[in-house]
Image (cartoon, rainbow, N blue to C red; front, side, top):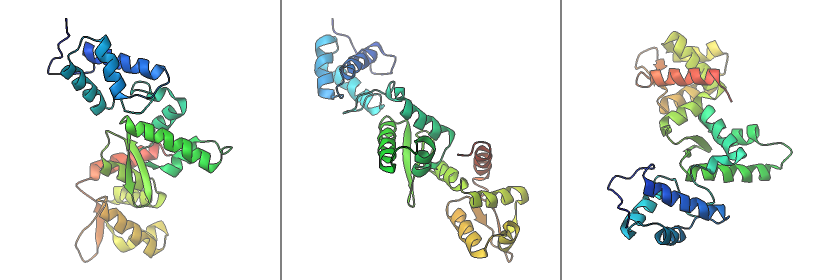
Length: 238
């Protein structure tokens, strides 16, 4: 008797689990996953109608449980110790960029090209299975967990910069500051501070109040998020 696949699919559905098991068998033979081969083997072995089987395979591809051309599934991609280490580092240090990950996690005994190649391979696998995503910011590639929105990732990245963080720290403590006073309080050149402030304004972290004094504050629309990110980075700094 053919197994009927109901309209609502989920990972716990017995037919879905059966197809995953077939995929894992293919991969265990050290073969890359080919959905045509998966379909043919599952069709012979499982009593699932053609339309239902195709629907299950597409569901698994859409959910990134299976990825064409890979040698793992979403459940096994983190079994590689280096990849697991990369993923753990990214989730613990939101907004880190490529160079920081390479510097912290890979041995100096390896050449720069070896370290770069290894890291690119692990990052691509994590992206394919939707564990992380890459956000482009100017000349940087920022990596964040897939569930974090891009704007939050950029704020984390910007507040990892020591001078940006000092500016935000002043604004948390004093709320309103005359723009021209910040470089004096931080003992930094005016042009550098103004450049940083303008950058923070452009990315909705700082808000400039239209007044004779050119006062600035944290962006009121993002203030709670900014303070939370500031505190997170202060506790766990990469």
